[in-house]
Length: 331
Image (tube, rainbow, N blue to C red):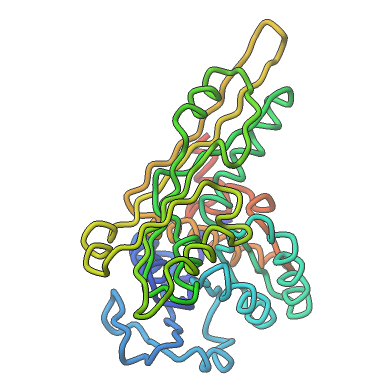
């Protein structure tokens, strides 16, 4: 698996926080290069991180099939990716960060059908959860089959949940924090294997700027009852000014824990813990997407078509190093 003789051409679809993060990550991966940015905005309004990077309208993608090796899709999971991923996987190799856990099977099926028909390779739900946390859950459960797995997120800003808030009628701007319940985490770390509901493990804090004339009670009810996002949690909605939101909630930290407690014999219990502490959720997620774009290109060259998840990708395919280099220096 030697390094490519010429850079892998990456197209960036969308140029919000995630798209800009992909640009930043690309600077650390010399075997990849940005072939273009694709946006629904006026291309003249987009300023790339690297001067001279081509910026195109989304409509231009149809004519660029020979100019891109892998597209990294940087839209939201609520409305963008369910439509974009299958549509683009019919013509391009793609990586997306679809993170609505309950809908991953149907998203996979739609993307898989399109990618198989187009003989492309499409990896969905890359990032850190789903993504890296998913892998660690599988590892931990395979190693300690007699046990329980717990996942805690935060405290941090969820991009997907914040995006969902901003789609609510009457909302002009919003940020959502996922907050783990400390007492629940301490129970899990003790190895006692508590039975915890979704509501017992996390709370959600929403900071919302209302549009002029919006009904705060209607907005609050739309948020706390939203399926797959807020309905299963104790959710607090704070209405704030645009100035306060920008001043106090402009950063995007996140992180979390995967904890598995289990026994190999009745006398011996073990706790496996994997932690991420992130200054910038989108920049870290983008770095994961970029590494998986490399893997997708390699798998496509090997003739692997259809949809994939992180479970289907060998770790060595993520690395810019060859298999020989990895065996020599990283085992």
